[in-house]
Length: 487
Ligand code: FAD
Image (cartoon, rainbow, N blue to C red; front, side, top):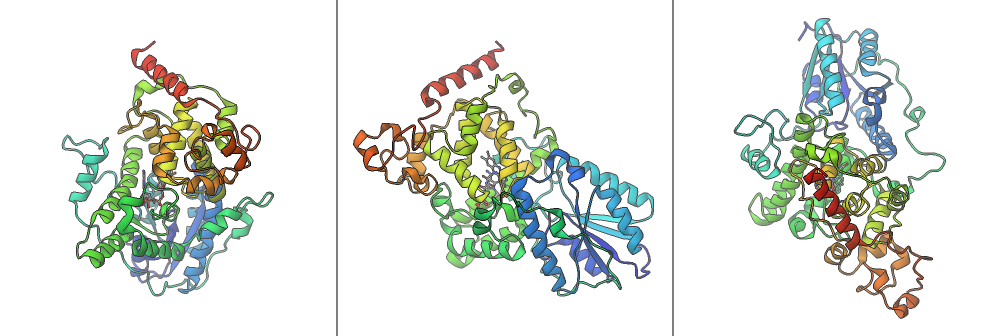
């Protein structure tokens, strides 16, 4: 640390939009110097991985909340846009700061950029220090017995679990020392992150409260009401059985250490045991997120290329009509359509249904998983490079620890198993709401009388299935066999 000249510390916020459990902020405050918090809209650096539409909506709310939280502690959020290296250089000149702190990101583009920034700052005698706010275990902190990265989840989880509980999260500082004058800031509204014409965000506004407070409340509700039953209810999309913390986690409004400790405290107070079944299962899902980041860090081509190289030869199909029907929730398979409509309306979809809709796109329609990934990137509020690409590759069969290709989800059976009364389908595909439970997942099997009573004419009020699942399954398996046999 350079001698204290009274020059401020630049605190660069990124995907850590919170004040508690924020090691870079804690370190900045503990220098005793004034702190200049800055967020740089770095779409230019991210290229085609700049936030999609739903994420931009979220980011607006999250930055607004962070700015309010900072001002409540006597500080101010400075906004800049453009290439991050230039924005930081400008701020160093304007403020005279000699120290820059941030919490690490792990996307391949961000890691490359941050390393270059760190090197360049150090060469100029500026102290640059980064911290871990986002993960329980950074990708280089655990390795297999042979010294390489993990490619299979179960041993990864065993190794992570074996490390014991993560450090306890730090509370937010009471006050954040301000400089005599803050540098100028851009105006959040001028970034136009919110949709205007058309304003498609009504459902998002209803479903979510971006920001640290929203994250804290959601975590509290989940640990109070749902974590104990998580193992039993997490696969039922009609129930509030999962935490819905994913967008909060993606933007760093809450961190995994905070979630971990809140979950084990809930287990302890309910049973006297830190990790009863529901809590343990939940922690293992948090570990899937860690595993995705581990994979992306060690296999940085994950977003573009199959992890199993043989999948480079898979014969995908161009099917614009099929892709469009899928995006619009008009495939004629109710559970698929319900999921895609939930996504469009709220920016989120239940994990079980994500698996079903993804399988339908890549196996029933044979559309490349990257098409689905790109759609999710634009429409999910939790769109996350690691989780999204690792999950799509998992479903497509090309991922490291993927589901075996021949296990093709049957959308009717999946619907009947995980949405037995059709509650989820009726919520998101209201035209089917009056069908009896035995037909709600396969309306084409309903008796003419049942369709009539439900006010449905297939092909007019709801589509006929765009493919026959049994035929599509055979076709997918045939293509898989051809890929494996090399002909
Ligand atoms: P909970 O069940 O409450 O789990 C808590 C947290 O654990 C989640 O918030 C998430 O951070 C993590 N988690 C849970 N399941 C998984 C999983 N299977 N893989 C990785 N992390 C997991 N998740 C994203 O955060 N962003 C994405 O872009 C994303 N894309 C996906 C695409 C596909 C095709 C599939 C099948 C899954 C995807 N997931 C993604 C994973 C998972 O569906 C979501 O994390 C989960 O549905 C979020 O809901 P929740 O917060 O209620 O999860």
